[in-house]
Amino acid sequence: MPVTISTSAAARRFAERLQQEIPPTDPASESCKESCEDRSTSKCAGRSPLPSNFGHDNSEELELFNRSVPEKYRACTLLREEGKKAFTEQKYKLASAFYEKILIQLDYTFTDDVEWKSKFRELQLSSHMNLALSRFRLGEYRKAIFHCNQVLSLEKCHVKALVRRGLCHVSLCEYSQAEKDFTKVLEIDTENVTARDHLVVIEKMRQDNRNSERKLYTAMFGNNASGAS
Image 1: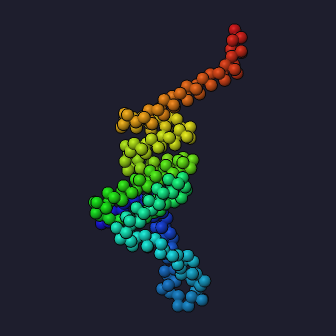
Image 2: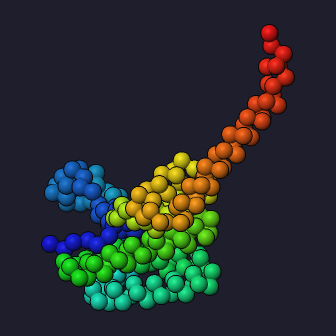
Image 3: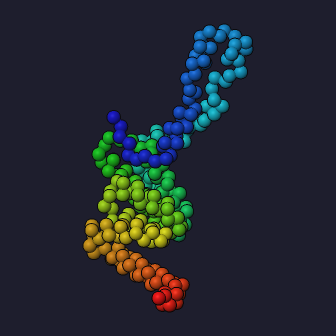
């Protein structure tokens, strides 16, 4: 039995569209089909046997599916090179588009071969990581977190994904979430400088916030508090 390498919204949308294009079974239609000889005078008159969008062109999806496994892998590696080139040129949106195309191809990639599965898994992980970095550079932190989560769903101790997600949380001022990620990183890699430094920064920011709150409280209530009997 074929084993799917990856799943994403693209494949699900394709399947949902196919289901929508297949007309549902209608008991009334079945009875009409058996008993109505003249549709112009029957209760089936005017009813279209197929939905208007039944002729949707699925050629692009079929092309992705029908490629041989080596062809699919070659296409993905070429897309990765184009994505790397675009990223190096700081064209982050273009780079993201190339990496997204890799994931779409992987949605239509099936194999039982252990070696091929390993290669496609590496492509899947690297594409999500590259997308996370591209989205981070674009300031799209939620999208970057999504791709980090995809990696961590496959490898829960992926250090780079944890670090990258932690940096996104810092950018979103979600310090508790960032602290969890950086702490997890240090549990895996005690020498990770990025995680250690950012934990120090987070604690300093918390201390600054506490001092600011204390000063604000004193400014608002200090005089009243000192004059209370």
